[in-house]
Length: 543
Image (cartoon, rainbow, N blue to C red; front, top):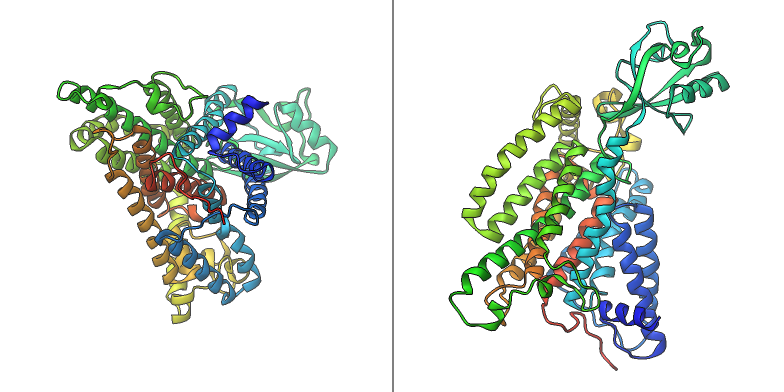
């Protein structure tokens, strides 16, 4: 128990103050760890860990020594953006709906919970590696799940059969019957026999749908396939991977952010070893010649990591790239390529940037081929229904935003379209499924007005400047910047650029799982950028 407590205190940077405060700090840090662990998998687990830890942290504010708060340009931008969101919720066409949506906007508070409980930079290192390790659980499961397969993929449908009459088509994959998983045709037949009408969930690229299969339409026959009206079946191995989230867009956006962190660390370590090898022959500086891989990789003397970080980081990057490919989500894949380009350019320079570009070309072509086979669409395919859907709602959103000066400045209110979409003739006058506008900038201006978009761009700009300043500040003890710090900063900066790029066609800021991951990485990145010393960035007073 004492050893475990010592490890926890070392990771958290907890000093023995008094029994109550020390144990409160330990409890808070445990919830920080749980928040990081759950973040790549579950919104419920993440929010429970974060909100419980936040509650304990608020209690901690009443104990001495007091926590000393800072107020920076980033804080100002975040809080003004939130205040404007509150204002536009009150002026919304449907204030009851919009005010309720403020819970999603408030996820930025996770930034403060994590950042103020990272007392040492090496704690930030540990949390970054813990996040990567946790994400690898769903990343490794993704290809295994593909190999196992799922559901019942039907072939040889009889036109007079019950599945064909329910408008199911050749190659559709049956997934659930009245909420229960379907693993064989017999599972579906048993469900259909028990109910006059059975709700059957199935997958057809790119979406899940639900249809009604009627018991009276069953055919005569001796086996389940004959009675259901198809001649053969197999496990499906073609769908858009969702991790543990249940939605491919969410999973792909989170993967882009974490994979960027991995790639940033990998690039930083490559540069570290490469630069060290060159400078080893030019100087006798002990810090430059001491290229022991243990020091730059291990976040704690109690928790040693593999001696060669390039190997595990490369493995993580390959597997995360594969998982991202299996989501078959074009925007996130392109965003990761943009993120990678930024990371290589800033981390290794123009020469390596050109080399990386040549390597990326065949990989990108293979990805486009996989996309065409999986979704039966091209990368930029104007005939794709999802692109047509976006074009329609983008046009409608722009028209709604510019319909009046009031809408232009204050917006119509978050999710007010849920109530007023018919009156505003939105979603192709009801012919398309209702939703949002599939673009973070457009969603901001339509729902919260032009100032909201400008404020959000300021948040991103201040955050990018903080990371950039961290990258520009060299370690005074060595001519080689600490690769852990540089890697995290490169990964966070590249991930932020990718987040903005994919946000042009995804409303990723409105996806709470993705937004929480973005602000978690912001906390780690800002912590590393603002202080590399072993002293706590947020010190405590003793009054």
